[in-house]
Image (tube, rainbow, N blue to C red; front, side, top):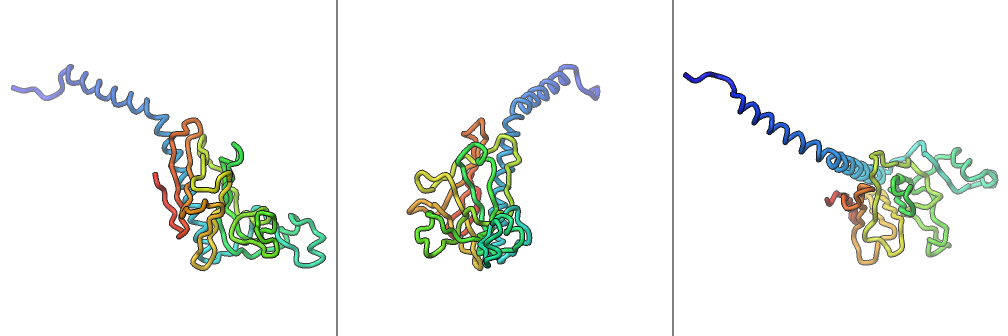
Length: 219
């Protein structure tokens, strides 16, 4: 007659199997955390790009900016420092976008969601008599500066950009919205933003944005 229950050997085998599984999970836990943090940061940036795109599509008007600088229209306004004057106005945006600058270690951990509220009249603009719109410049209003919250995650590089450039402006202009990628290399139709684990730079995820406005995670 067969008795119900486990033998001592069967119990030891089960315990051994659980121990092996547990050791594998513990060994891979740091890697799992890094991959999860990288995925969250990548999806956050993609979401902010899509928010800017939706704002450009709907001609959204922001009531309050994090920081702003606008052109004075009267002699009285001209006598007020531009950063102070910005708090007294509610400028209209010609578009919205995301600006990234990888010039140093700190800027690789943040980016700006901005409103295209002031034309560029600096030497970057090829024709100073015809102010340029469609990309970020220091006069534009910053809707919010987004710091990458995930510890150890940075924006590693920007691919398909002009040689020598460390910055990128992706601008969405109503009503379609039109997608303008500033400093996109000649012959390219999309930009790639690569996020990485700072101490493991081979661990990456890439966001692609093309001139048609398609935003997607490549890998």
